[in-house]
Length: 478
Image 1 (cartoon, rainbow, N blue to C red):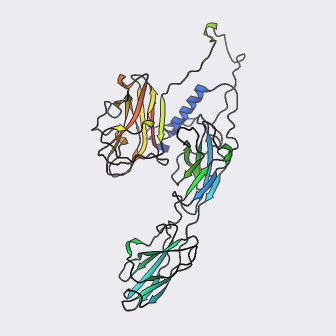
Image 2 (cartoon, helix red, strand yellow; image 1 turned 180 degrees about the vertical axis):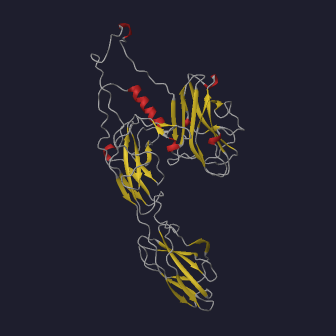
Image 3 (tube, rainbow, N blue to C red; image 1 turned 90 degrees about the vertical axis):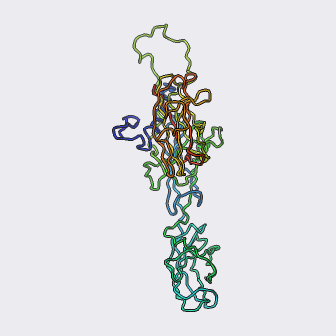
């Protein structure tokens, strides 16, 4: 995609797609346009410098946890944070902080084996034993170590005694895998606990424990791989001033922040409080397009206008107002709503119903206006069809469907590119336009609402989480 020269808004050229660069054309660019329009509508020519609130922003405080996420073991994770002012302009990012994840548990050595020819029911033949170490659960384990081998010569009353090696640092248990005569590979037999790093007591394989033939020796180290990290704003700006929010950038390479935006933190400490939380938890999800700024995007106020030197001619006295008043509100011709708190997992109805009224968008509009609506989301892979549509709402009743350009029909499946197919995880994206009729509009505005239905009264997950948010937007093109 090519971009505009000043604010780098994306241009959609031939063969290019709205989904390029993370839907920047229809998502992030809309935020930029909205901020600039708001600034133009409310700015003053005072010559004042931009806010210094974010000057000298410090490095974030990081706290690592060995549970609650999917950040792998043994990596160093780097973060920067920046503040966003009430107009949406971002500050210069503060210094970098990093935290090291705990190293994975080392692969254990092989056990020593000893025969007890009167202590069990093992038959003659070749026996192989492999150990893996785990922490904290026996399914979070190291790859298997070297195999130990013992030939049982004869008899039917045999047992094999396992003498364990010294435990790897941090391990809380051993998993035992055994291949008995006639077996093709070692499979899971049993687990023993390691207490305070001490070598466990000997284990006697007397044939009484039934092995799990479906659990093989692991080949990937999954110990300490469920890490999460709390990211806290520097104390000097905590709590945040009214109207301010913040952004978190993450990378696994120092000072390399291309496409590193992890999260724009706009969550309140409690709903309706207006107080933005100053801690967010990174569970290892992906990052998106965006990088910390080297220079602030918040411009200074324009210089004062000198009427004595910067004007030409004389304005007629009748056109000079004696009082001035600012409009109580500005018309709204574009808006965007996002849900990133909780995915939808309830059982859907087979008739059209409201998805979430907090996503409703109201635009200034008249009959004949062209309204474009767009949606970005993802369906789960349950074996049902999920459908989405946008309707105009008048007096709490759906009036017209964007997919059908008519009254909503419970036998239709809404916008085709927003449909979740059966048995697969489906991305939702794209937009469509529709021209308003008189019945769409009430009081000089149109109320737009997302509706949902399924092909059966069953659960079909629609993601709306911090890592896979649901975004709904609308524009009045006039």
